[in-house]
Structure formats: structure tokens, C-alpha cells
Image (cartoon, rainbow, N blue to C red; front, side, top):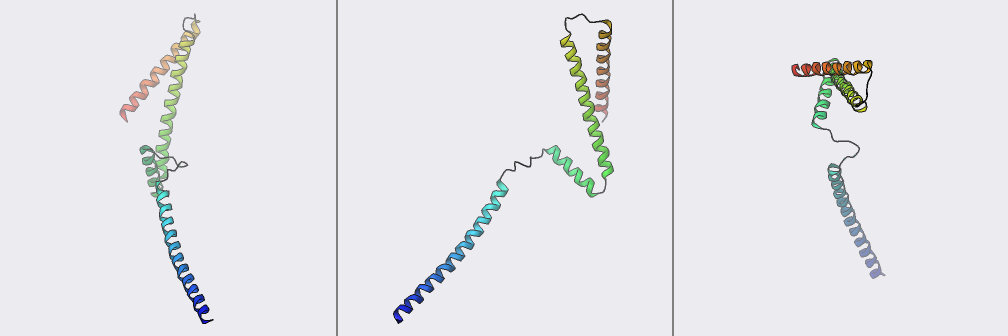
Length: 140
């Protein structure tokens, strides 16, 4: 009986030692797994968050500074000017495209005097606006 008890005790001790080893190994595995996950997160490309261009990064920086200094009014004015400039460029481009389309579509056709005047008027407006925008861009 004693022999059997001692063998049971040995088996119990071995099991406990093995469990301790398993716990320490599992802790080590957990730590290793956490390190790998952190490394993967850093290396993983974010598809949902597009990478900002340098210009966008600078704009975001300016926005954060404006908010931090309670200088939102200045930020709004700058944003409004940028929007107006882009809008003017878009309208000018649309006018140019419209003139080119009309020239292409009515090429070789006999136009009435009113249609000729309208084309000349559009062309003159386009040239004046383009000249003004070039002068404005040169000063800024």
C-alpha cells in the first residue's frame, strides 16, 4: 500500500510540476502572442483609413492648430477663400468646355447672326475671366 501511495504522490507531484510548466509556457506563449499582434497591427495597412497626402496632412495640422487656439474665424475665412477659388476654376473650365463643344458641333454649319454674337460674347467673357484669374494668381 505504501508503495502505491508513494507512486500516487509521485504522479501527483509530476502532474503539478507539469501544470506549473504548462502555466509558465502558456504565459510565455500569451506574451509572445501579444507582441506578435502588436507588431502586426503596426505593420498592417489600413484600408479604411486612406493615407493622407502631404498637403492634406498640412491642412489637418492647420485645422488642429486653429481649433487649439480658438482661431476658428480665421480658419473659416481661409477655407472659404480656397473653396471660392476652386469653384471659380471649375466654372471657368466648364465655360471653356462649353465653348469648345459649340465650336466642334457647329463647325462647318452656317450660323445666324445672333448665334455668332453669342459665341463671340462667350469667348470674350472666357478670355476676360481667365486674364483676371491669371493676374490674381500672380499677385497672391
